[in-house]
Amino acid sequence: MDAARLFFACSITFLLGAAMGAFATRTLYGDIEPVEPVTRSGPACPPCPDCPACAPSEASMPGTFEPASDELDLAMERLEAAEPTESGLALTAIRSADAAVQEAVQPCLRDGRARGVGGSVVLDLRVRVDGGTGTISDALALSQGKVDAEAEACLVEAARLARFEVDGPDGAGRLKVAVRFDP
Figure (tube, rainbow, N blue to C red):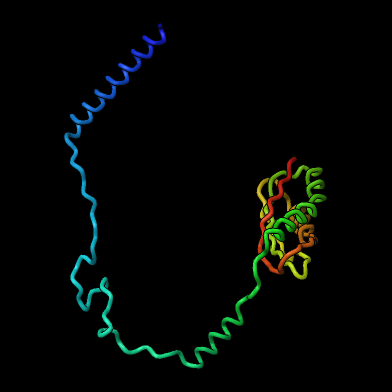
């Protein structure tokens, strides 16, 4: 029975609070009129020949367009041939590279912990897969915390020596691997 009275008292208090809040809002702000949304049907100004917002008509466009010359076509072909054509890494290659690097750097982690090195290092790696074999062609270490140059050099060298097998297409890409020294 006490629970019912408590519920009734709370309900009445809630309803009175809502009514007082509505009364206070109406007193402070008055009646609020609904706002109509603004719609735009086109440009705000009539089209004119010198208006930069309006699209130029065909009659006002200078000159005519001619097909590209043979020299331009040859230059475009040379430019396309100069662009790198390597594809990215498959997901299996990324996972295999990450596992191989984590395994390769384990001796560096053990040696660093023994010397009291603490902190984290992000290895920025250039990974290449050719004929099912993956290699790390370039590595860069970015450290944070008490990581000395010797520990960074060990991680970079170990990462460069990592090799892994991949069933998938050849390709190349970048991979970042986080390594943490726990003192």
